[in-house]
Amino acid sequence: MANLILHNQDCIEVMTSIEENSVDLILTDPPYNLGNFMRDRDTNLKKMRDNFFGSAGWDDLSFEEWEESMDRFFEESVRVLKHGGSMIVFMAIIKVESIIKIAERYGLYYKTTGIWHKLNPMPRNMNLHFVNSTETWIYFTYKKKTGTFNNDGKMIHDFIETAVASNGERRFGKHPTQKPVKLMEFFVNVLSNENDTILDPFMGSGSTGVAAIKNDRNFIGVELNEKYYNIARQRIEEVWE
Ligand SMILES: C[S@@+](CC[C@H](N)C(=O)[O-])C[C@H]1O[C@@H](n2cnc3c(N)ncnc32)[C@H](O)[C@@H]1O
Image (cartoon, rainbow, N blue to C red; front, side, top):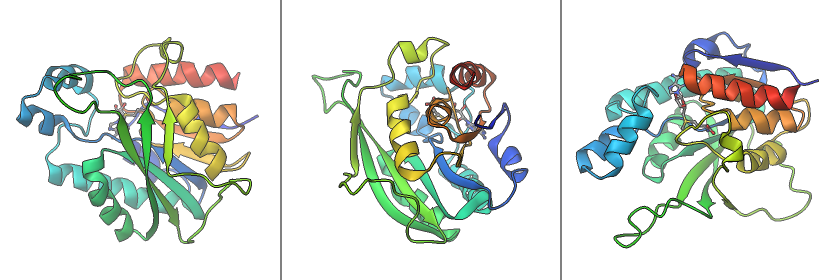
């Protein structure tokens, strides 16, 4: 049976206590810190994000504070990652360059910036502008230029399409940026092997954990917000039992 460790705590505090050189894959979706950006633009997303992200952490910081937080996160990430381990970080497209700069400071090897395309995005303001239907993911390896890559000899594009998380995946409660399990399972299966250890320091509603445990990987998950932590715990324990 896979090992499962969940924390309702600040991820930096938890990561400092994880053994060095012990994690095979960090698969995570940190706050994109778009709160102030939305507010300054006075879009009708502002109210929604105020409701959703009020207590989420790291979403209303100045750019410098956010950069410093991400810097700490990468510093701890390379300490816990195995040599040859991999990392996927979801991010808003406008922040990709900042993330790559910080990651390279800590010796991560940049591989790819890929796209997740949502097949059924919210049709918000569809008659006014292009509907927001994509997010990026950035792929790094640590200390080696190639990590685990289970492609079975087939070409894999840097473009993934899935539906957004279904209502069934939200039955224990909703998270505003919940990733579908199918998307996380894709990375789990390509970038790790059975019995490997996967860490998600910003696990939100726990989709990475569900994907990891379903596929016989060990999982360490951290979430600061108690409500989201409880959703994650219920979802992950359901597949673990
Ligand atoms: C973009 S969401 C992750 C969503 C997740 N991928 C899912 O499928 O539900 C980022 C999460 O990080 C959490 N968070 C923010 N700062 C944190 C910190 N310092 N430590 C741990 N979690 C944190 C937020 O509460 C939020 O739930």
